[in-house]
Length: 210
View 1 (tube, rainbow, N blue to C red):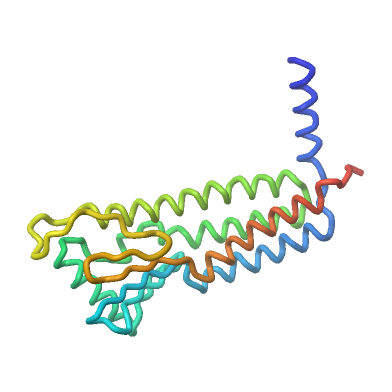
View 2 (cartoon, rainbow, N blue to C red; view 1 turned 45 degrees about the vertical axis):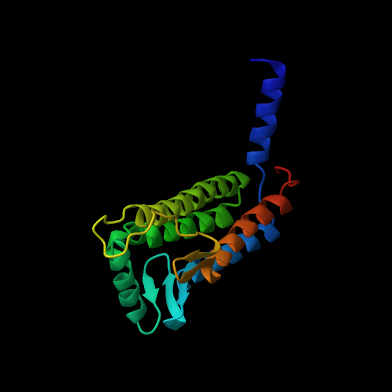
């Protein structure tokens, strides 16, 4: 093994073995609170407005359920509209990710508590890496769902429209409807968890092994 590579690995292992100070542990506990709070709030909101729907139609997407506006009636209206353009109806049961998402969040809570208790830098690095993969996968899965709904249209539908990709972030015009899709409180809470991990790494980066 070349000396430069050996030195790099030694530096890496030394960094992973650093202990966490009190500030980093407190940040991890704050991160746990943010993770748990994200369960109760929506991650994303899809909102549709049109002349015939002055108040709009709203879907709040949680990690484990879809909540429609107007006491659940908005999803009925959206599915009726989807029928006319050949889009398959929205059913929560089709989103298999929602079945295991709460368990994934619970797993991150446990791993974060472990990092805070044992106080090792490598646990925080592992958490950051796993949560990054989790975030990329979740966003990719959401994008795929939107693409699938907008492109697998029934050719025999009463209204013929070109396949489209519903916007993931922002606003777009679809026929006479304006669709907006924006992150909600739970997404910001999860981002806050990432900041807690980064902060925990930063504040303990200079700690030395006793």
